[in-house]
Amino acid sequence: MQHQAEARPESGSMTPAPATTPTPVWAAAVGNVAELTGSLQEYYCELCMEKSQEVKPFILHILQEVDEEIGKGLEGITVNIAGNSRLMMVERITGEDFWILCRILKNNPYINGLDVRYNRISDVGAYYAAKLLQKQHNLIYLNLMFNDIGPEGGEVIAKALHKNTTLKHLRMTGNKIKNKGGMFFATMLQINSSLEKLDLGDCDLGMQSVIAFATVLTQNQTIKGLNINRPILYGEQEESTVHLAHMLKENQCLVELHLSKHDIKNSGMKHLCDALYLNRCLRYLDISWLSVVSNNIEGEGLVALSQSVKRNPTFSNIYIWGNKFDEATCVAYSDLIHMGHLKPDNTDVEPFVVDGHVYLAEVSNGLKRHYYWIPGYGEACSQSSNAGFSLVPIGQHL
Image (cartoon, rainbow, N blue to C red; front, side, top):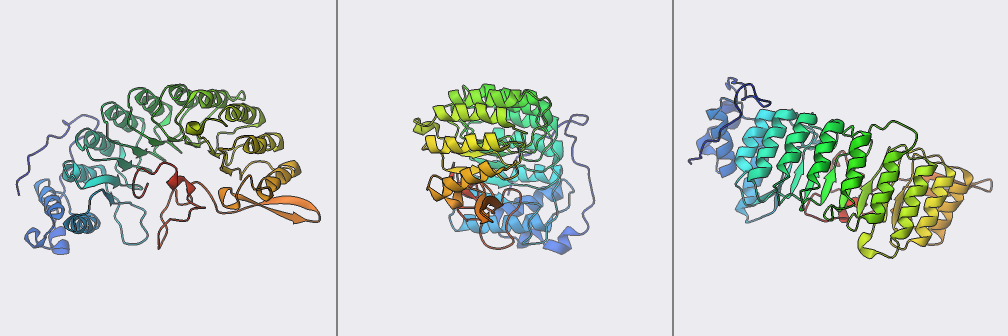
């Protein structure tokens, strides 16, 4: 088959052309191109030969599966080339491998999702991901988590989303885009009106970018899910929490919010509770799924949050493990569960009594138990341990 050549970045730019490497092994390992029947496999091997790159058996295996799905007439396929799969032997792909994948997938109407988590595509691959977002008009899900992408890579991806109108869910988890990259994503949300879920957890965001997100989301009415877990924050005044609370009073779209490891204290929790009180009668402003895991909230703040559950009928799921529990907190959440305000499957604590005193034990429920990894067998479908998957159901594997 014939494929039009695509220009690559000039030498000396942020994304240099792939290095030429000999490929003496791949032909013996995977056979002759003529023996392959799937078009994606053929195109992949052709491009590897053209660019003198080694054919990766793992990639070839995945493309074979995709070819089979396409042959069955399936659409809306998510290509899963996760580098942390425990179900098969994997070889983590580089930015240059990712360039070839982007060439293969950019015009394929059957594919709307790409998962390349836990690989090594780096800022080079981020450049190609940005090009893919500009040219692949069927892609609604892109998972780039933990790929050694830095601030520069975050910038090019964020800018690519200024004009993209199809992507619904982007996961950048664990890529250290830092405050600089976070600011570019916050700016993007002022322009993009199609993205619904954005995951920037563990990205080393700074105070400035967290406040920028809070400010932008007072106007953005598209984002339904936002993860800004574990930013790098300094100061004792909880400025970011105050801005997030103000945003929750104004935003009319956000459904899912992750604020784990923000070092929220009692004063910050009070601001959040005040904001949540105002939302109790606005069904389209349902922010019932609030996770405050692993902050620095003590009894007073946690008890105030429990009162919000009683007063706000839209609240259904709360996760509090990792904060500082006193007896008042333990009693408050025990009462919530026993009185039916909070279902046992919708929280990550379970009350128990010893010598007449109430304590809380951790249970393995959560918004996304399989957030960083995939199960060794079976499907990650437990409703109690993966509640976040049903929040904003954009598509399969989301």
